[in-house]
Length: 217
Ligand SMILES: O=C(CO)[C@H](O)[C@H](O)COP(=O)(O)O
Image (tube, rainbow, N blue to C red; front, side, top):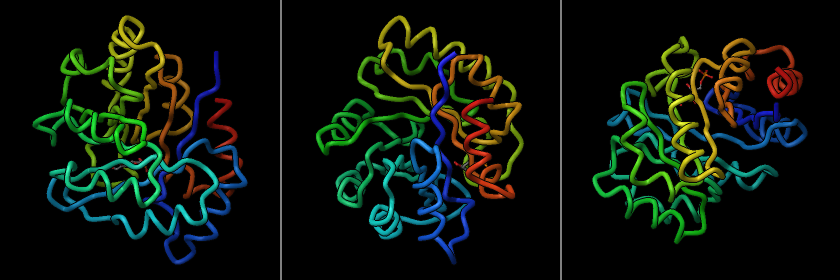
C-alpha cells in the first residue's frame, strides 16, 4: 500500500511559538502544512486569515494546504494565492457557482480542492470531479480541533474512490478530523491519500515521530 501524505493542521499548534512549530514541520516528514481558515459564520469559530497564512509561508518549506471554512470564498481566492497557498479548498456548501470558483482557483495558480461536510453526499461532486485536484472529506463537523471521528466517513471515502477511479484517477482524497493511528490506518485502507491531523500531532510528546508513525500506520 502506498504511504499516505500527512498534512498537520496548525490550528492545534502553539501560536506563541508559531515560527518554531513551522520549522519543526519543515524538518519532519509532513507533506503539507494545513491551514484552517474559519470565519465565525460558516462555522462557529474564528481562527485566522491571510496575514497569518502569509507569515507561515515565509517560514514554511512545505506547500500550504489552505482550507477555507468561510462564506463567499470567491472574494478571497486571489488574496490567498498572494499569501502563499499552494492548494486551496472551498466548501461545496458555500459555493453557488462551484465550477466558476474552481476555475478561479486554478487561474490563480493553485491546486483546486472541494470539501464536503459529514452530511453532504459524495454523488454531488459527479459533475465537477474531473476538474478537481483533491477532495477533502470532513470526518468531524468543521469548526474545532480535537473532536471525535465520524465512522460514516469510511463509507464516503470508498464511494469517492470509485468516483475518482472512474473519472479522474489523479485526484487526491484528503480526510480531516479525529485522525489518529487507528482511524488513519482504516482511512488509508478505505482509499484516502492525505490525512490531516491537528491535535493528535501537536498534542503528542514528539510531533515529528507522530507524523512519521502516521505515514507508516
Ligand atoms: O478543519 C478542522 C476543524 O474544522 C481541523 O483541521 C480538524 O478538526 C483537525 O483537527 P483534529 O485533528 O484535532 O481533529
